[in-house]
Image (cartoon, rainbow, N blue to C red; front, side, top):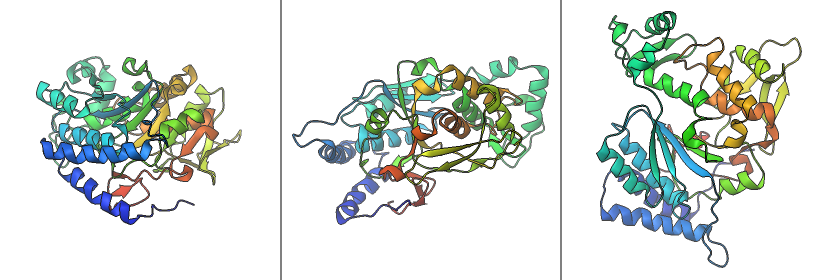
Length: 371
């Protein structure tokens, strides 16, 4: 049902420009600006209506991503903004918010603002310093964390977890190994993102991981589809794995008046279909997950009290701080699965061949051969 994107000769010629742009983003000079400016002009032509009017923009739309710090991530942030600007945001000028655990250096902040212009660019600190976070934990919570985080490098255990740092590697049964900073981003995006004060004035959030990169102009405007169909979420890839932890059933029942979904699938026309748990069912059948690298969410729905409670329970009920088991992919999926599955749309199956490059694939569905 999902057809791969068919490249025309025009696409191939444009692809050479995008390949150059994707590789030469480090060159902060006039030649590069001309390159993406030319691509953006092509985008403007693509989006203009028959009378040459500029593309429509909507109120309360924001582009969002998260990194740990400005170093070493400033390069990937600039690259991402440059490509998104050329692919979609050149005339729309939707603002950027980058959540960061560490404060940014002024030079990096100025560089990012220059590349985002004329769109606004804001860095929002999403955590207290680690020593304060650890100081607010109980002795039991701290001991549990130190027991999981014994390695100051991925393969070298230092046996002195009293010196915990954001870069320390932690193990978690059923979830593998990850740095403390990675575990925090999973928790932040699962629970703390949805009602964050920095997002209170926005309705539609375009989430793009800083390593999810456009490879061509977006063929259609996903925000128009979100607004016209009153969608809860549009997602670039589903499923990206699944949740097999049946404790999710208990969490859903606590939030949604004893209701839960045990299987989530796509219909032929690219909408969610939620299959409720039977009264005596205590195991998930197959709860597929939205890929976290690129999706668009209706924040008004995710901010509804029942949904905020669901995503609070996700990380805080029978869980512990800095856990990867209950991450953003579950959080972004469970809300539409429970409240309005017909308003959760897959991009590809609804005519959006976005060709977003991430981890060697396009849209999580096919090998990236564009660059």
